[in-house]
Amino acid sequence: MRCLEGKRILNERINGVLPACVHNAHVNNSYSPLGMPSCQKGKRLISVENLYKIFGDDPQSVLPLLAQGRDKDDIRAETGHTVGVNDVSFRLEPGEFFVIMGLSGSGKSTLLRCINRLIDPTAGSITLETADGTINLADLAGKQLREVRRKHISMVFQRFGLFPHRTVRANAAYGLEVQGRAKKARLDAAQKTLEMVGLGDWGDAYPDELSGGMQQRVGLARALATDAPVLLMDEPFSALDPLIKVNMQQELLSIERELHRTILFITHDLDEALKLGHRIAIMEGGRVVQIGTPEEIIVNPKTDYVADFVEHADPTGVITAHTVAVPLTSDKLLTRCEAGSSEAGTRHYQHPGVPDVDFIVGDDGVLQKVTSDGQPIAPQRLEDVLDTNPPAVRARDLVLVVPQDATLRDILKGRNYSSLPMIIRADDGSVHGLVSERELIQGILDKNGYQASEPSLEVSA
Image 1 (cartoon, one colour):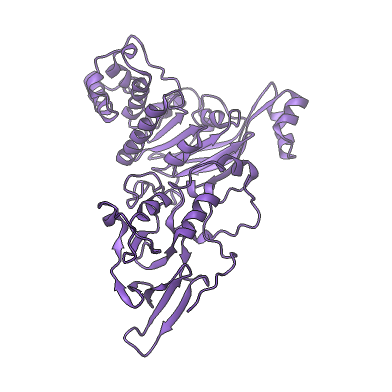
Image 2: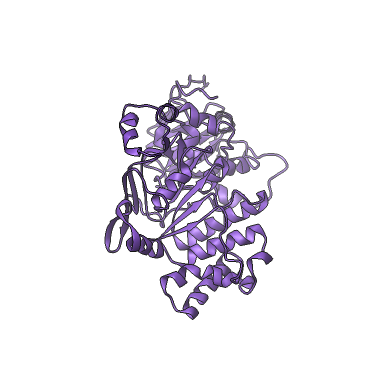
């Protein structure tokens, strides 16, 4: 288990740079981050506040015990009640892909069912923002609750729940049928969503003619056809074969980018959570113990439980260049100012591992030029270089410029082309810092970023 103490991680890598809703780690083009503009930072669509679900004959009697800090095992032993959800609060932003994960029995599926009111919460509020105003889902019953499910919330279950006597198209159209849509309109809409999930030619088939992965696609098409802004998904891919599961994940990301739905996704698979989520909530014993971006969860776990969870996770598709870079403000870089010359108003930076290379930056933070032993080197963008075949020997006359939201996986690909430190470019075009093999290896092995407390290295001028 990783030690949680003594790690002063440079939190500026995230705060003010990567919005909570932005996730770029697993998009094929990592320079066009998923989540913007679809995710509307600062707004909210669903708010869960101090939510509890206790199973038993007298659940209200257990609330004071939870307020005293008693854990669920003690409460079960003493009262016979089971604590499913314990004081959970979070908000979903429009267009956000929010993942809830945890071990079996952590309360994640119970929480989802409370939000959709398949089970009644014991206490707390669940509000949904609509064009007609705010709806408290916890207060709804009967016709009002059914209306919300018809118009505002769709659900995809782990088990597909298809009608065996209906065609694939009729199954996909079922939600629209419940809404009262005309037959032709609903079948046309269902056909469009079937095409979206790759089943456009299977509309006249029946569920028993489809594989498990295809049946799950029908369930997804059915949920998408209703145009509900919120999509709840309860471990929808857990029963699928690994390859089919990966394909479904990619397809879901593509659909999310196109339709901008708000998705609340339940899983026990950390890799799946890291791949899909803009943000992740990790549950333990009915509580949410940490909420953060995939990078925050990997780099800065808040509890031993979370640290154990992420111990063996692959960080290369999650941790960003901004996180591992040695920033220009660091005293780890050798610097000097130029005055009274053609380079007046600039500052020279040298990475301790390559002291013969100067990165020359203007007072505005923009890169002016790079030199090696006084000879200029023309920087190139990483995305341009990756379109070419890597050389047999890594170049010493090539410096790559990398966006700060590029992942370690992107940087690893770039290391095939050049042995020199990479320049990490901020969103405003200025230079944020430098990344060499040292920072890359530290990010992969230690799952953390640049640490200001790290001892300085000796650098000869």
